[in-house]
Length: 107
Length: 156
Image: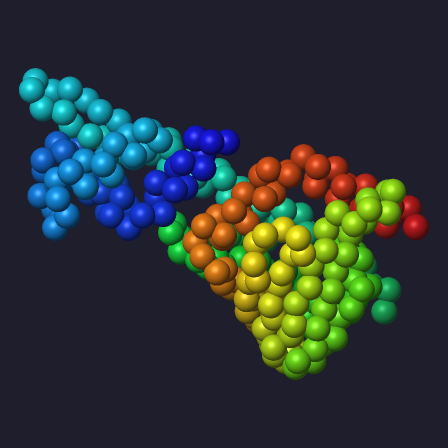
């Protein structure tokens, strides 16, 4: 539960979403990511840390450089989060539909 | 034939959209929102009050088998146009979620099919996400209660 909440908090921030969008296209070093933003390198580094902690980004050591990859499984976890809410409404609407179909035939 | 309910909740936004197509003429779909007895059946809650008019108000309440109120919600109706749309507020009591604004649109597709679009605006993106998580957190309980509610309706 906690981890999932963290994922939600992580993607609530527009800069972090922008970082995810960049890294989703190709793996990047922290320096290359920071260059894309006006914020200080420390600020971006903090955002990367948060994204890494909740596993939206994964690290890969390549020689002296660290590359960040996007983790699509974790984004799927976010989609799954909505699923019980969707199912709740789907159940309600299925019920609505069956009630009204009977109502129609009764008339 | 796929009539799946779709939920679109963009990340970091304070709104969401629920859409669903029904194998029902639009008049019947709207009636399911208008008639208190029918609302009670598919929402699985008691309808205390449902004033279908501009500046009207509504009130739902669900009790458990022992008579304890487990869910209570209320709101006011801002606009009510039969067969077209309902604009209303929704607030759960004692839940700490604040009020949300709902735009419920009814659309005729064919003589026998119709589409429902609910656009809900929350106070903050955080509150929206908390709301989205509710069925996740209480999923098992709610599913159980709903099942019982449905069964009791069919037995009746």
